[in-house]
Image 1: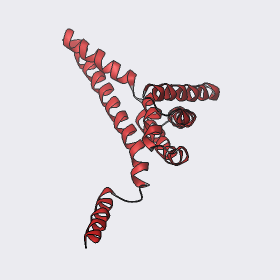
Image 2: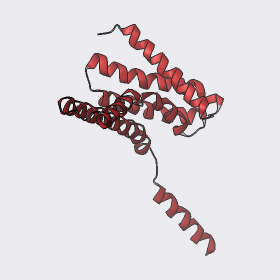
Image 3: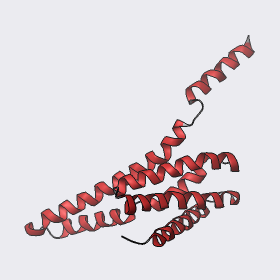
Length: 172
């Protein structure tokens, strides 16, 4: 088990990566500090859940994404920007690049060397890495979206109905 300070350092780097993606996406400058803090909190949640509480990487990514989604809502109200401005750059550093890379290497190995002795193990490893990458991406998307969907005050359908009723009242 790694010491706590190395895990805290990873949180710092998650925040830096989040700011890098935020700059790449050309977000307003006033949001960068909050994006750093949200990205660091989400990444640190993922790392701490995996290393200290023993949850799987998929569950850790989901919990980190939920933290990002929850923190993006008050940040959006505070900085007068949409919640996605904070959530998307903060969640991107948690995308499972190593599993997708191993998936691609496995696919290349399967296509190039169909030896029966190693084929079954390579196939199992490739499928395992592909499924991990897919479930982590789904966990990130769901974890970021669920808090925002739950905290919406009204649905789009109610907004349309109210606008239609207001137009009908003005005509009469």
